[in-house]
Amino acid sequence: MMMDNHMQNDRNRASQAGLERLGIAPPVLLAPLAGITDLPFRRVVAGFGAGLVVSEMVASQEMVQAKPSVRAKARAELGLGEARTSVQLAGREAHWMAEAARMVEAGGAEIIDINMGCPAKKVVGGMSGSALMREPDHALRLIEAVVGAVKLPVTLKTRLGWDEDCLNAAQIARRAAEAGVQMVTIHGRTRCQFYKGRADWAAIGDVVTAAGIPVIANGDIVNIDSARAALAQSGAAGVMIGRGAQGRPWLLAEVAAALYGTSAPERPEGAALAELVSAHYEAMLSFYGRDLGLKTARKHLGWYVAEAGGAPALRHRLLTSRDPAEVLRILPEALEPCAGLECAA
Ligand SMILES: Cc1cc2nc3c(=O)[nH]c(=O)nc-3n(C[C@H](O)[C@H](O)[C@H](O)COP(=O)(O)O)c2cc1C
Image (cartoon, rainbow, N blue to C red; front, side):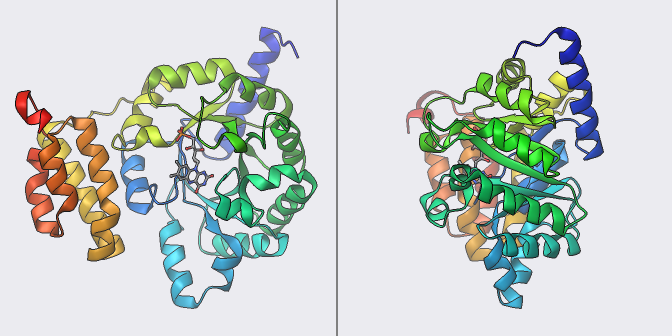
């Protein structure tokens, strides 16, 4: 559909108002990445500035049926009660999705997001995640159940479709909006692409045209230029960034400053970077406990050192150490950009 500038401006204004009603400003969001965007990382990203951070997905039925101790742990991980946090629910049955939604609402969640994009076989095999795109009527029943169960705003995260022959995100988004969903995020790939190829930001434009609610563009946004291009090509109301923030928790704030005029973060270097990474590391140890924390933190440390251009030999020591005190001791040097021979070590 061709749209003149006037219509485009009206639509942009409506989208911005829709996001403001959800308390999302600036419209630069942290994507849920299971196993990565845990509570300690979300706090670091939110500390620099982000319009919204989204919890890793939680399986609705498993959470509702879990023993109280397991459930308490799941709730802690979701960060219920944290400002500007959306809790993402996955599931297959309306009853469990609604129960889980009620539970996280009672726990203090601000927004509930429904996962309809996860391509993992474990999830799709259970017929949730992006498998729901193949059954839009069933997906709608889940959406209606969640919207009907809570007073909180409900959002949806999905992909362009199941495969090239089933690009139905626009219809699903339109129906979801009619059912009361207030924002939809589109990862510009199909389920069958998994993470291959490039995200198609222009194709997200069809969802923007159809949805009538704010649409957020996601996929392969890794810096200010790609964020600008994703917005220009899709006409979306904002961007969601996942892997681009690994080792660069300040990226969202940099994008927001460049695109929406918020105050620019100071990109930490030298001692300030070592302080930031040490604090993130210690937060992970205290959140997970020493042993699990040590293991879980390694990928983040690896990304920080890679981003800083640190020496491979020190990186290796850091990532194989079993002693948190040693990790903290090595960190400042490991985060120094290496030069000359060290880099080949
Ligand atoms: C390791 C990993 C875990 C993910 N976990 C989730 C998840 O829990 N829920 C979800 O909706 N999407 C999940 N995704 C998809 C991301 O949210 C995002 O849509 C995708 O990575 C594309 O954005 P990016 O290129 O900015 O990373 C995951 C992706 C990766 C790589």
